Image (cartoon, rainbow, N blue to C red; front, side):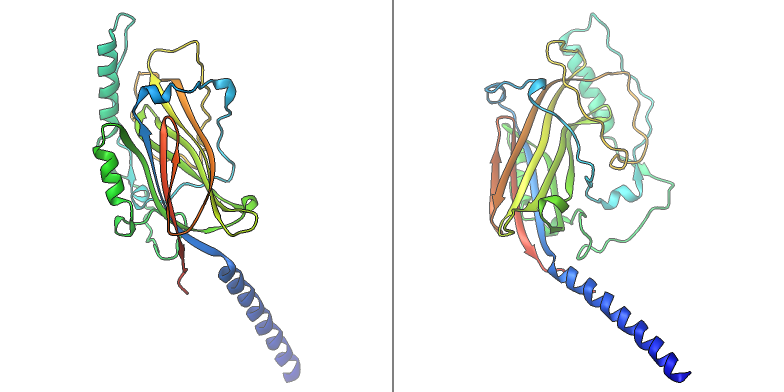
Length: 287
């Protein structure tokens, strides 16, 4: 009986150490990187209009396995529900229309209130993937300040996170949303994917993002169809209702792929958008 019990215990421990070894080996094989990304607009209308942008030339969509960067504030803040309403009449002038849009945007950037939901958790910034890192880890602070002070550009999005980089078939796209808010949408939308090339000797960024020019007056000659943001990505909370209806009259699509070297800044150019990114190898600390 003692021999039988010993065999059972030996089998149990061998199985445990086998799965522990496989798990540790798999984790060690993954190559992690710290990624910093800023996306900004080109405010020069002549540059934007230098190319033709037609709805029939592009298919805007969100990948199925897309993920949003985790933000600590998303866990305990929700949008305040406001009841202000704006309305537009057929006789409104362009100045009145612009004033209503500005008012609507200002209402949407009011401070958010605490949520009653108990969703608080602690982040492990050294080990959690796809989590927005604090500004102390940023190398783009000066770059972002320069963009924010520029009259020719506007900073639309800044992301700073860590992740394991994989080949295309297993890569996880990152949801991109930024810039000014129009109703329940933002002017910058889309996704970026960080992956390895086939030889795994370069990290590649794939961009599928678009900058939207909204209006409350519909342009029937250019009807863009924007994809719905997946429910799993949408920020929880109530959105301030507005009687204004926004139409995407112009959309500027940025679809590019770029191989990158580690520890270098890389710039992707576009008539309406610009993107700067850096990647640094990151050693995942042991548990």
